[in-house]
Image (cartoon, rainbow, N blue to C red):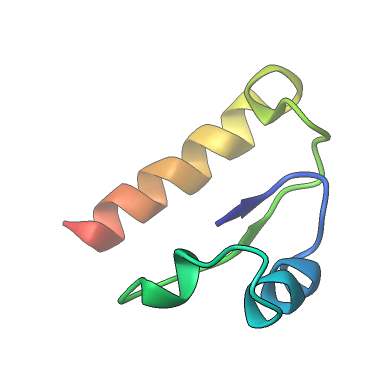
Length: 60
């Protein structure tokens, strides 16, 4: 889960509280903290691309 304007800890709390019901069903879930604001593809494209490439390598 890419966390651009919230922390991984907040995301974990939301998931534990049932706010995102599909994520507990995931077999594997990593959290990537990127302090970029709402549109990381515009404000931090290189770090976002690195996060996505690492996720793709892990999934392969």
